[in-house]
Image 1 (cartoon, rainbow, N blue to C red):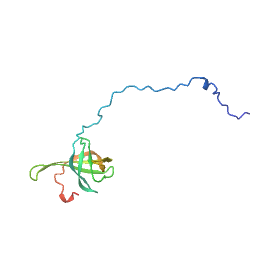
Image 2 (cartoon, rainbow, N blue to C red):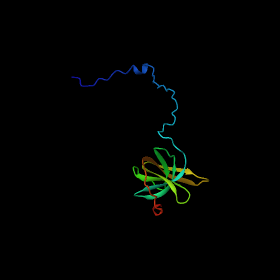
Image 3 (cartoon, helix red, strand yellow):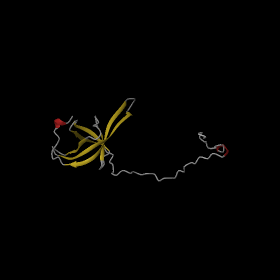
Image 4 (cartoon, one colour):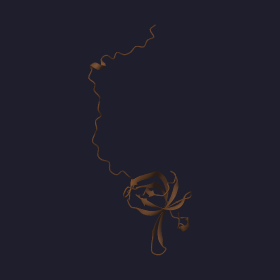
Length: 145
């Protein structure tokens, strides 16, 4: 019995011209803005509250109906639920407030060069709104860091 394996005859491979199929690239329409919610590129102050980290003022950017980007001095862990207070002061002690519960979805650390040679950095947190609530009360000033 012959137990040797038979190898296929490949002597013809070098006799034929080598062609490599090149996939054809089709022209596509440029994708527009595919976001679900319209974003407002406006910077304003918000109060971010957390049961673990307390309350702190932050700079909000890119507000939409689905979420917000907030520049903060710390980054709560991903998945943390925080309370975002949008406050508008009126004359005297009156103010309007909208309160949203949001989930921390992204951490962003931005390094850039400010004026001159000095480098700067910003920590930002992407949050997705979970619900809007009516608290009916104002955050006590002693809770704010």
